[in-house]
Length: 229
Image (tube, rainbow, N blue to C red; front, side):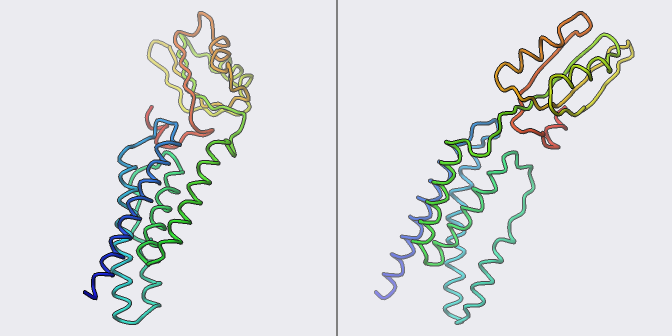
């Protein structure tokens, strides 16, 4: 009978972990507006909170038996060393969601359910507020422009790109045996609305065979996005 209250406490921690993990996953799903969305990351957020709570509970129980509070502190901090990122994170906010899930799980599993729930709720409120009011967003827009020309038009294309953008970077140039050339630029434009049409009009003419314009989610693409080409 003496173990019954402890079981109820553990069940309460598991319920709180599931609820807060689901809240973190729902926030990620609601705020994600790009192509980097992954439903498996939602599952990861939920399970991370639960798993961290279970591990923290084990460490707490072991610490109570040994009577070492210092060991508990080092063990909880050492759990963060288990994290290894083997894939490219396309949205930097994914780190925020993951660390929030870890911190929430540690707090709940360490019998600080109120602090874990309150801290997680405040963080999620901040994420919703930042997303709603577009805090930090600039008026500029980034594009990837691919151009195919019948001959080498490097100087002319560079002049057009310079006139269209406040900043640009050449990604690659490919020259074919028949003399045709393919160019790829990343550029940042101060114009958000109508920028694509302006780029297409600037390259209108018989010298250019094919033009494609893709809006980028960042002012600078990552190395993985460059490798896609």
